[in-house]
Image (tube, rainbow, N blue to C red; front, side):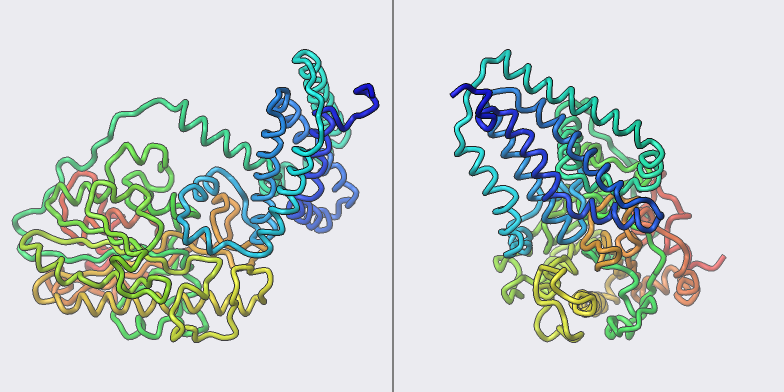
Length: 538
């Protein structure tokens, strides 16, 4: 039978079908958000058809160009895989698969990945990936000559592009308003957003120029005038939001232990990023949020390097995925498994990171000590797994990683239980430090890397672009505790510091506050960013 009577045996036929299928079945979240905007703005809801055509034609353009070869089936399979992956997270959690989220996915460990498994995920990958790809590989497609294949595919790509331009011009009044006012909705375009993110990653990885390793704080030292040794524990929290700490006015008592400690809780703190892979390196970087570039971070020194130059003993203990490159040059201990962590039931708990610290401290016969404890904290979506059973106080709580199957109250309670456990952990860190208050100037510094969306605007988890992230993601807790020896020696007024706890600050303050606590003198230190200086009477 001639090829023209069997269109399904032509590769371009399956390209068109695939573009249509993905547009209709893998973009529910984008169309839902667009429809909500159309209703709210008083626009005609029929414009949803225009947006669907935009999505279909753009997708068809790229798919037609990228499949004009004999391996077109493999390329289509990749499109379906990315579409299924993106659709699942967009529909389930309101998450956008952008550049940062893709890199997060590659850095996710097995435990985190297993925490996302669900029957819904299996359904999405079966319906949006496995079944259509099975059909594409099963059907017999006649291999065309190179010239004919290029003709068909480039012709369809050109037609799609011209059609897109024509519809854009014909609907210019609507389109101009939509793309100007709703910059976040196009981020949900699936799989175009993820493909563009892939391009960004590839371009930076393979085409960015090599840069020399950057040194900072080469003049760093601790003056001989400072006789007392410092012992500082820096706790890097995970996914904690400031408005869920009762220390900051939250209605539930999520901080029964810390409220009995002499801590200062800052409640107006902005994170550097919306994901661990951005925020954790940024916290330790001299650049600060406005200038921070993750691609450059691996080629430059951070706070720990400056501390090392001053003779400070450094230990990083991690109950999360990793230090994200911060501790690559320092002593690093993994507490995600029972090999090092004695408190696992079966998930290894943050409290286990205190085990063996006495031996470590006693081995350091001279110089200051800073210990970094990187929490598992409130990592979602399986919040109920983050805490021991005895800390499941707030009920009813969500008992699944499928947050859309739980009520707002259940999600809130499950999350608040993780804050309750963090409260216990931080209080234990403070009690641990009190044992050394006569030998050292002690301090605990707690700050979370980012917060979490708990269903606001139907968005869950974290990692979305900063400009569209809810306040719950970017407003993080920051808590300081100073031992009596440090307070007396430095003549600190903790009541004065509490009066300034509403001051707008950010992750940028961490670098300089740690320099101040450790009494490290260097030209890169900025006193105005040192939170400890707020406790000194002028």
